[in-house]
Image (cartoon, rainbow, N blue to C red; front, side):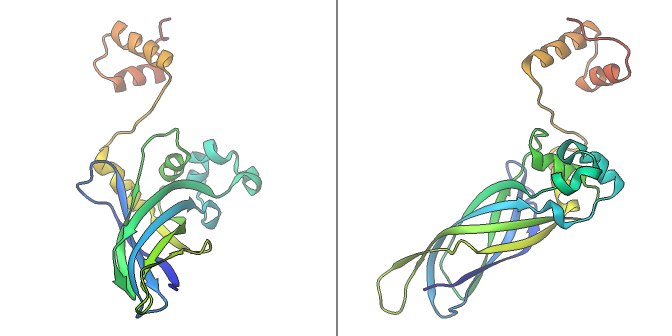
Length: 215
């Protein structure tokens, strides 16, 4: 029966993906090195191990929305669920490396985006938790099926710079902000009434306190 181990060897941001995406280089190794593996249908939960790094005063200020005042972090700083991913690993014997694609969002209503954006430098501690199904052949026996043990996991430290460069590739010098429809309608009226050609100018005008949004 296969005894699979998992390791993240690296990460890259594909240059021509349709949407922001990180491709983690996942190494899958079978302890029974001469046992053919036909296919692995792999599921993965990706967590942010937020307690496993240090935070600068600037980081702490920008993480206020997630964890509150630093004085309370002993109670509020916690592991965050980032996302779920899946991949089908093709046939191999011994060990193989596949891309584990993880789509990324720039939606600032998502806790993971707030966390990534808040960090200026360093690394993001991640934990990958694996589950799934293995199809294999043992000797001359017919194809067999086994479940991946619930305790299979792999830790990886994602450089903050990789996430920043990926988002800058898809959203250069910009960010996405979602608001309620009624708030957008008010902002739109304000933009039209003041003859402002861009959303940036409308927001800058409001932030500067030049006028109030018309009801």
